[in-house]
Image (cartoon, rainbow, N blue to C red; front, side):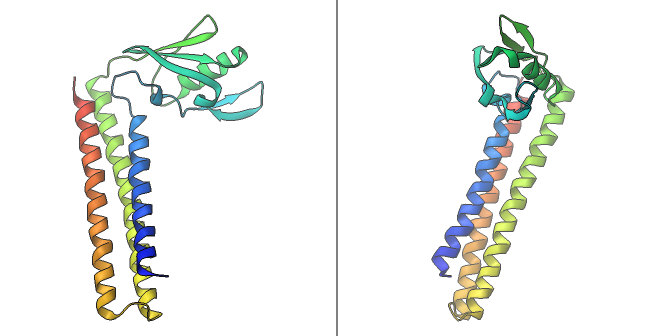
Length: 188
């Protein structure tokens, strides 16, 4: 393996960790209605005997700042979707009306905000674990390239410094995302 290819793979893995974290943060409730809040809820549809994400079963919109509207493609799945939203960890209470569901988004209590902050920290730590795993893979690649005489002793140290610089850069990005999401969540 060439050093440039190995660095590129490490960078890609770290980027995926940060992108995944950003995607996970969209589902953390901040008191505003956004379709991303519920689009990835798993729904077991009795009629089809299978599972699917809510976004594949319905159109999700936000007609008001504190309201989501869920319009199933197949009206017979409305009860299954309602049950899945009600059973999710989001503490939402959908109301069926005219073949669709209205999902009011209540204000967050201080206690619930603190729970969400813990969740944000947990998700950020999981992203950092992904970054550290990519770092370890990069360091292992450096040792292998040194053993295969692709890198010199100094080349290995330079490569490991580059991997460490990437690790620091992406860890900082994760921390910035977490701080921004926490500030957004704690804003009343």
